[in-house]
Structures are given as structure tokens and as C-alpha cells.
Image (cartoon, rainbow, N blue to C red; front, side):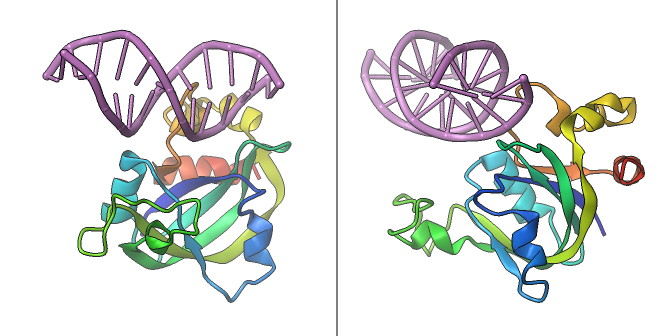
Length: 152
DNA sequence: GCCAACGTTGGC
DNA sequence: GCCAACGTTGGC
């Protein structure tokens, strides 16, 4: 089992969307960055645990934990011309983008703020604390996961 | 809303 | 395959 951190704007999808329907998987769609796509495709497996990180909002930071219940499959939104994630250059024969399904595990009692994450030297290798990093799907190693859990 | 940092596109 | 121009991300 591996650990990950996924970024999301809570106005699009927040930890509360998971918490409000704890038995319903949510399709993690709309990843349109190749580096992040490759990790969804090659790395993210069923059973893995995922920190949900809220970005571009008032309370930036790690908000909760979800679990992967379905690993890589073609992101359906890329074929939906009504979706903002539609990609005319993608085809069902050769899909370009990947989705996974996540299910609620737990909400943290308080958001672990970006400031708090930055204040831990042990997390300096985590892309999310690095200036200018735009990676929206990133691996979290065991030590980093434990470090973050101790910040709860 | 600003803007720095970054990723992608496309002309050459 | 270079790189300028452009569009996007995301903290502030």
C-alpha cells in the first residue's frame, strides 16, 4: 500500500463531499497534467491512502484522508463534450487522461495548514510545500505520512 | 485580483 | 528540437 496527496479546490470537490456520502466513491477526474496523469496510471493502486489537500481557498492544507477503491481507468470527462474537462484530441481507442475512484476514510479534526506543513523540516521534499510546485498528484512516503499525521 | 512560476503549444 | 508566447496554477 502506498500513500499519496491529491490537490483539489474545495469549491470543486472538498473533503466534505466525501464525508457527506461516505459510502459513495467519487471519481477523481480532471487531472490534465502529464506528470500527475502518469502517477495515476502507474502508481496509484486500490487500497492506497490519499491525503486530500485543499488549495486556492481560505484554509489551505490537508483536510482529510480517502482511500483508492478503483485504480486507473480512462477519465470519462475527457469524452464528454459538455464537460470543462473535455479533450477533443483524446479518443476512446487511445485515451489520454486517467481517473481513479476514491472513498471517504476520515476528516481531520482541523485542517493541517500549509504553514504547518512548511514548518516541518521533514516535509521539505514534498512538492506541495515547494514554491511554484503545481503537481496535483504526488507520492507521500511512509515517513512523510507519519510526520503529517503527527501534525494533526 | 495580482503575479510569479510553471507547463504546453506551435512556428521555425 | 529550440524557444517565445501563451494559458494555468495557486499562494498571497
